[in-house]
Image (cartoon, rainbow, N blue to C red; front, side, top):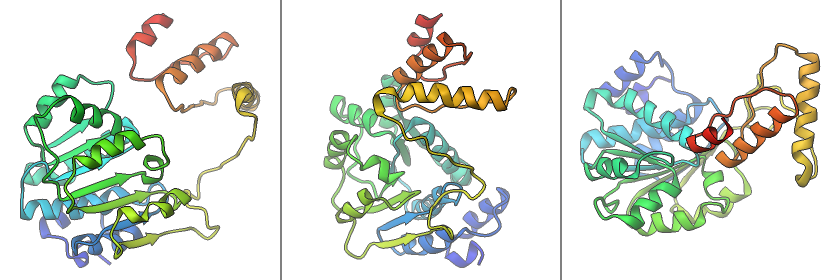
Length: 287
């Protein structure tokens, strides 16, 4: 199957060709026609399966037919993912003069507010920062959006963002197309199917083992008590470095504060490292 066979406009097919995309992935083959038909959609597929384009392509096609801002809102749990999604929208939508806006923490709210007031076509945001804007200013409105996308929906809906999502949902129109995408179909996603319509299209991809992860990824789990997990982490690093003297390690944390504390801890026990996060004042304190 080709992108043209998914009922995508010729300009979108050309953009895919320019980006070296010859054939749609399974999630794109199954979800794009349903989204173009106006159906709510829940799509689950492993990382690297093309989930972003599965919703970006049909959204851009609908936007090109009736362009205005703010046309679509994409919510994601992390700022890094927000930038990745925005980059893909920009690459595909360049030929139609797409205007996008990224609303995440760690950036100037005044600048972001000005960008929102210019009515961009696509807003990609983390829930916390977007909720802050909705509560603090009235220079923009989400009442005319046609699409609401929750990327990494299982993480967004697991409870941590409930207050922020409530604020955002109250600012949205009743009539909108809702798209939920995730790497896994968790119990959380099963419980929130009531967010979408009863006729929502649900598509889930699994590999032969039934685990939706990249086959090339070598995974190990270390089960440990929560209150001493940093001690276990130190031992994991020690073991790795003993067998891989020149090996590199990346450790992901849930917050900037935890990232900084963990970095300082590892430096104290002899593992030289660099902390990468969006809170420069913490980095200055360490120096």
